[in-house]
Length: 236
Length: 237
Image (cartoon, rainbow over all chains, first blue to last red; front, side):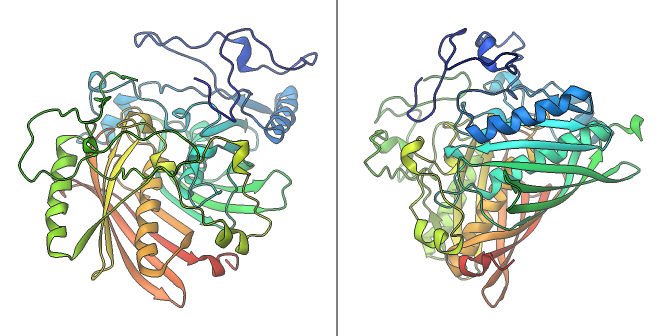
């Protein structure tokens, strides 16, 4: 389905523009996902696609360079969540998830909008410094005030980034508190960098914080602190 | 486009199920939106549609009854945002919104997913008590942990509800702070009630808070406090 303003690749193997030597991996080289519900569809979406702006691609390349010495790692990201029902159900026995056969296959929220229209992002993790960086381009379907990103959209990306930071540090965890200070609104379709780090661990509590900056680092858009609680008691 | 599990009305005027007398307004009675970019498309989405569960419809009816004496009012909700560019640009001269001709027409975030898959909600406001209530059903595309709503999805609805509460009290304002405590995760496709109220006004700062409860009121899912600032004060934070 073609939409004005958002380039889409319709056929596998079709390349647009010149290819640089040792070009970074892109989504174009993979076959398009098929839609059999019984198959596990594992397309890594944290890779460049035609909707990514120049700023987004540049940042991605910068971070891919950092992965070369092994200190940084690019984290894959998929539309479908691996079932972790046992863990969540153990802690919330009365929270009954709706059976999957009653609804369309559930999708990870930040990956549920079509390419270029919603959340375009990629995350990189540094295991030595316990830092996770997310480069994020918010599309036109994330609007709040006219021409700017919705507060909930940026909250979603902050929660996701903080969550990954907590996950890589302490295993499966859920958000207990999220405290965001918004400073300057983010223009729709611009690119921002979300820098998160693990501040402290107290038993099962993981304290993580992050800030959201413009690409040139000159504008601080927002800051957040959060508390995540580990779900698996074995890891305490 | 038909999707398994989510009923969709494809033709205007097609009714499903029995119609009660004096039935509340529904989206079925309106013609489907046309997609000419130059037209202003004003379809009120805060009305029942086939994806709404029984709990959602029940709650909607309860609140519609409350509107009868005039104390409560149902708030309409649209996919496309009225341009307020002058106001936002005046306070953030370096925050340049991207020109609209470079991208598909922008949509209000909580209304950008297709019917039944994302955010299904309706808001009601009581102007005497300065309270806004949002009934919200989160669809399968809002997943975080397997089978449960994403923290960001519930944050989005809380921010939206708090924003409306502030808007009706003090005019156009932006969120300066949002502090959420998550207690119990919300199962995907369940219905919750977000109760928000205006706590305090300090000069032109608006302090609003809300809680998120299950339909039967027995489970407190999360609570939040928020500070909203009118645009002219926002950049001073």
